[in-house]
Every structure is written in C-alpha cells, then in structure tokens.
Length: 211
Ligand SMILES: Cc1cc2nc3c(=O)[nH]c(=O)nc-3n(C[C@H](O)[C@H](O)[C@H](O)COP(=O)(O)O)c2cc1C
Image (cartoon, rainbow, N blue to C red):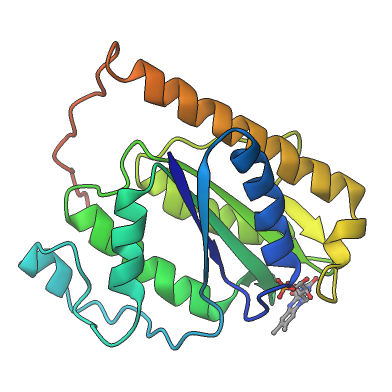
C-alpha cells in the first residue's frame, strides 16, 4: 500500500513538510509506503477551462509542460492521497491550488480516478486561516468520492519559520493520530473490499442554476 503526499509549500523542510512527515511516520510504522512530492516551487499553470480533459478522455490535462499529468498518474496508482498546504492569505497557496484544480477536474471528468481512495489534508499556519485552508483542501477530497479519515481536532499545525511546528505539541499529536487513523482505514478497506464490493459509480447529474 502506498500514500502519495503533496507539499504545497516552496520550503522542502517547512512546517507543511514537517506536518506531512509526521503523518508519514505513522503510516510507515504501519508498513505503508510513502512518497512526498514538493509542489510549491514548480511552475504550474491554473486551469483555463479548455475542457480538453473532458473531450479527450485520456486522464490527462491538455497542458503537458509541467508535472501535473505525472502527479495525476501517481495519485491514480496510490491507495491514499495526502494534501498539505501552507496558509497564504487565509487560503491554499497559489501553486498548490493551480495543481489541485487541474488534477481533480481531470480525475472527475475521466470516470473518478481517485474514487474510494483514502484522502486527508493538513495545513501549516503562523496564526490565522488554518481552518479555511483545510476546508478548501477537503473540498477536493469530498468531491471525489474519497474516504476521509480524521484526527482529534482539525488538521492544522502552527509555526512561522521552518520546523517550528515541531514545538506545537497539539499539532504534532493531531498529525500522528491522523496518520494512525489513515493507516487503519486503508487496511480495513484493503481487507474488506473483496467481501464488500464497492457501490457502482453513478452517472453524474448536473443541475446548473441558470435563470
Ligand atoms: C505569502 C504568504 C502569506 C501568508 N499568509 C498567512 C496568513 O494568512 N495567516 C497566517 O497565519 N500566516 C500566513 N503566512 C505564514 C505561513 O502560513 C507560515 O509561515 C507557515 O508555517 C508556512 O508553512 P511552510 O513552512 O510549509 O511554508 C503567510 C506566509 C506567506 C509567505
């Protein structure tokens, strides 16, 4: 079993990375393989609503000059997905959001590539905006029919300078419990899905509120 994690920060050793690594440590203790992908310093364009991914049905974004399609493939192959972002202006960091908009739109319009995978999100923040950032990240997971484990509080860790979240005892525990719950639910699903086959996917009903 494998979890792929995305660090939305440009800092490879920043507080988002530390938070993800804390979750990873628990997953690894449970025998689950992990891979971290650093998103924050990449040049990632936003979605331009060209709908090429709808038309082509090739599980890919029309932009081929950045790593988004490779990351879509990695998420498709993984059993679990972990999203992490630093809080920038009380929201998800821009590069991370550009990646997620494209990767999750492609997945949705190509038959639900992440359907029934286990997914969770974390945020790192100096002071304010952690909840709104985690909520935004959770929107990608809950839109995709993924299964979301939780912790004993919302998945936010505090710190300004790289590594400061290590001093946030409560934040560390939140990440540890999240990692243990994520490992457990992945194993339960892994063992149970033969005995209890997943529901059939449904054709999407789109009701657009145009007056
Ligand atoms: C552009 C930018 C915007 C930020 N906006 C906020 C904010 O709205 N609220 C806050 O508490 N901290 C804010 N911060 C601080 C970061 O959230 C904080 O340093 C966090 O630990 C960064 O995570 P990282 O080390 O993974 O990059 C901001 C930092 C930057 C660079």
